[in-house]
Image (tube, rainbow, N blue to C red; front, side, top):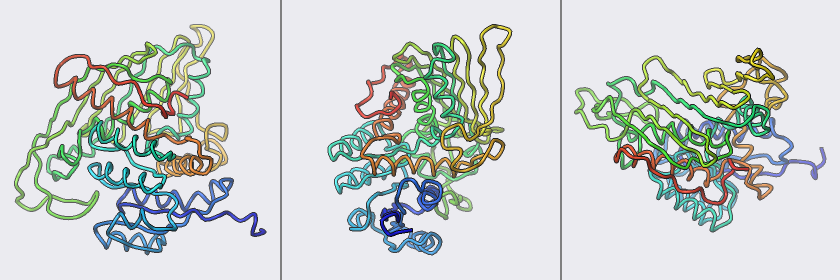
Amino acid sequence: MSESNSPRPLGVGLISAGWMGRLHSRAYLAMRDKYSDLGVAPELIIVADPVTSNAIEFQEHFGFKVVTDDYRAVLGHPDVDVVSICAPNYLHRDFAVAAAQAGKPFWIEKPMGISRAQSADIVAAAQANGLPTCVGFTYRGAPAIVRAHDLLRSGALGAITNVHVKLNADYSADPTGPRTWRFVRETGGSGVLGDLLSHGFDLAQYLTGSPIAEVSALISTFIDQRPAPGGGTGHQVHAAPDAAMLPVENEDYASVIARFASGVVGTFESSRVAVGSRCDYGVEVHCTGGAIRWNFERLNELDICAGDTLRDYGYTTEMSDERFGDFARFQPGAGMGLSFDDLKVIEGSQFVRSVLTHTQLAPSVADGLAAASTVDAALRSASSATWVKVPAPNAGTTFED
């Protein structure tokens, strides 16, 4: 290959060397193979983490050139073109605003901040500096969801009438699990609303093409005390022996009824303590002439109901294949499924393509704010036991495209 045809380097800086940082790192490295048409070769330049051993492990495993405990070194490094922000929620606002002010396009995990106000700060900073961004609404990229999106938007199933979303998991079902930052309002913000239902709100808006306009919500905390953490980092934090019990400050469970601006109605339910549910994340969209149904636990399948007469009604299961989304970049045919890690590669490629084309193709920080606005409205509704309006989305959302 001639030098003119060689992919040009794209310098990557990573903030926080935890589980999600691993996924971002692997995604960048996979892009040269899966998305060679981008014409870039991501290079892992610098990783920042306050736990130096974590950053060193990333250097040894992924090949980062520089290790630091200061995120500002990432933003100031001259070879860094894009930044991934994979830190805990309470650090998102400061890191993202600083990245925007440094002129660095960034890929950030959700929720973007611990409040709607923090998310709005991030949007203002990114838009003031004209930066393409990406928020980790990973499920959008699943080929089955792309297929559902195209079917629903084409009108092939008729007009959308109602949506049901569930995100039930058991990752916090053990009452002896420690009270980490996720269970504290100052550091985690909301509980399951921000952690899981932000995905659900975004996915429903993406599939329907309409913002959520008004919500009525109920929340509950089923495990109201947890032991103090005793050691470990990331997902390996464990409770201390004979630890003091500390209060859980945010919700384990949320149920939301929503009205969309288009007239569509929706129901949303989520739990982080649902015994029996591992990753029971699903969406069902009903229309006047059919319906779709998808669940993350069968992420490579889509249930479709479509037909000209009542005799034809009933779901059939369609397996993802090379016709849908970016499936063909990973597998040659149906039955050879994609994984969650592959979805992060798809997401990351949308971010990089957005940066290269100066066009917002990935889920944007405006999309992140739309989800945060719905979370905020749901919290206020649960507190007041009334319907609460959701502010109209800012310019720059991609779900309305």
